[in-house]
Length: 122
Image (cartoon, rainbow, N blue to C red):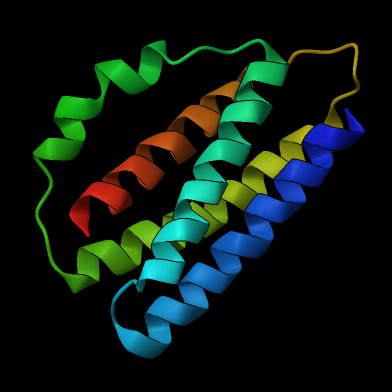
């Protein structure tokens, strides 16, 4: 459980760095894409530890494909990434190693959709 919380804290830290970097440059650098991939790996490990799977991610790919592009939309996605990372960390802190949080699984699935969207937009 402590490892999941540590992964959640790392995801929040990386999301904050991504938000700052995007606000300064207006785009994501190669280093930022690597951070985004790291967030995705961390969230996958968290979701796996919670007993979740990727069913929701697969069913919502078409929804992401229909979104409009542009810096404003990418910026909004990055802001959402940060807020969802924070929400996931809060959910993880509420649980114990003996509990399963459906809210944390749902939040992790949403985070994975956002990371994949951002990676493929760049």
